[in-house]
Length: 368
Image 1: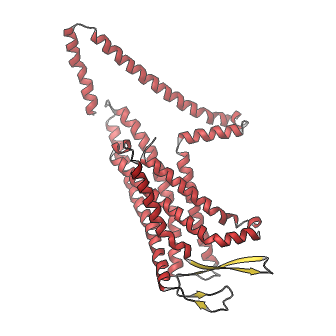
Image 2: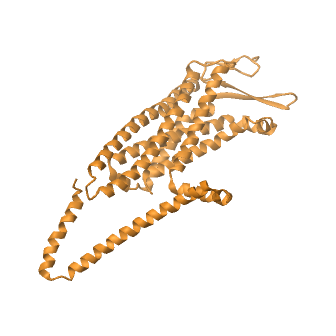
Image 3: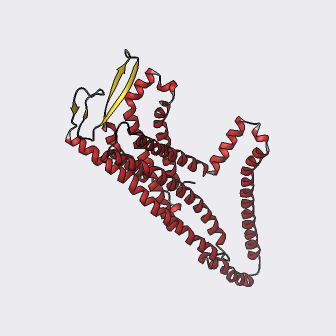
C-alpha cells in the first residue's frame, strides 16, 4: 500500500542496510584470515576512520527516519483520512534531502575526530594502526611517544567537543525521548479506537471501521516494535561517546573496552532487528520468501511443517477471493432489487423510493 509510513519504513531499511554493509569490514577484521592479511590490513587501516564516519552517518539517518515514522503514524491515528493522502514527490524528496544533509553535518566530525598513523614492524611485514583523539588538549606525535606531543587547534578541538555533544543529544537522546512519548500516545490512541469499534458493534459501518482499524493496528505495532528496539539499542552507545569525551579512558582499561564493545554490538543488533521487523511485517515479503526458500529446498516443502507454511498464503488468497465474491454478489443483489423496483407502477415506485432512503441516511451517518 502506497502511503507515507511505508515509504519512510523502506528508507529506514535502506539506511540500516547501508550501515550493515559499512560495518562489514570491521567484522571481517576480527577473523584471522582477513585480519592477518597484510593487504587487507593496509586498506582497512587506511580507510577505517572514513568507514566508521559513514556508518555513523547511515545510523543517524535511520534514527531520524524512525522518528519521522513515529510522528507520521501518530498523525494518521489521530486523523485517519491522512493515510489516504499520498505526499507529493517534491515533499518526499525535500524531507529525505533534509534528513540526509542534517545528519551528515552532525556526523561530519567523525572524519577527523582522530589523528591516526600507520606503523610498520618486522621489516615491513607487520602493520599496525594507532589513533589519538583530537578532541583533547594534546596527544603524542607518534606511537612510540618519543617525539613529544602535538596540540590540535582550538577550533578543531572545540568543534569536535561540541559536535560530539550535539550528536549524542540530537541523534540519540532527543529522538529516543520523542519516540517513547509518541509510542505511549500511539498505544493510548489505539485503546481509544478499540473502545470506539466496540461501541459501533451494531452499527452499519462496523465492518468498514474494523477493517481499517486492523490495517492501522498492524502498521502501528510494527512502528512501535521498531521504535522500542531503537530506543533500547541506541541509547548506551551515546552514553559511552560522552563518557569518552568528558572523562576519557586509559588504553589498558579492558573493562571499559568490553562495555564499548557491548554497546556497539547492541547498535548493530538493533539495525538488524529493525530490518527483519520491517520485512517480516509484510505478507507479500513473507510469501515471496517462502516461495524462494521452498524452490531452493523442495524436500522441506514436503514435510508437515512445510505444507502448513505453504498453505497459509493460499488460505489468505481464498479468504480474499471469497470476500470479493460475496461483495460482488451483494452488489448484484442490490442491482436486481433496483431493477425490480423500477418495473413497478409509478405510485408504488414513489413509495418505495422514500422507504429506500432510510438505509442510505443511516449508513452515511454511521449511527451507533
